[in-house]
Length: 200
Figure: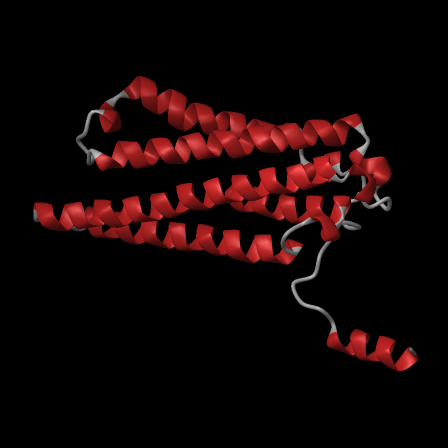
C-alpha cells in the first residue's frame, strides 16, 4: 500500500510539472520503494528469528529486528509526508507555474477528491505503522499486543480506511485517462538525446 502511494506521487509531480518538484519523479519512487523493501526484509527476518527461537534472548533479537523494520517504515512514511507537504507548498506558492498540459485533470473535482483520499490513506498507514512499533516494543506478551480494542481500531481499522480510499478513489479512474500520459521514466534514453543534438 505504501509503495502504491509512492508511485502515485511520482505521477502527481508529472501532472503539475516536474520543474516544481525538488526531486525528479523517479527519485521519489526509487528512494521510498527501496525503504519499503528494506522494511519488509527486516520484518520478515525478525519474524523468522523470533518464530524459530528457543531462548528468550533469541526471541528478543527477532523482536528487535522486526522493530527496526517497522521503524524504517515509520521514518520513511514521515519523510515522504514531509516531501509531499513541501511539494504542495511549492504548488501553493507558484500557481502560475503549474503545467498547462494536464490542466483539465488537476482542475477536476474527482482528482481533488483523489488527492484527499491519498492523504487520508497515507495518514492511516502511518498511524498503523506507529502503533505496530509501540505494540512490539512491549514484546509479544505486552499490554498493547494483547489489547483487542486498540488492535482492531489502530491496526485493522486504519488499513480498512486506507484500502477503501485507494479503492474507491482509484488512480485508474481519478486520473480520467491521463494515467499513461503522466508516466515517468527511470532513465533517460541516451539514443534520443544524441539524435536531438545531431538535429540541432
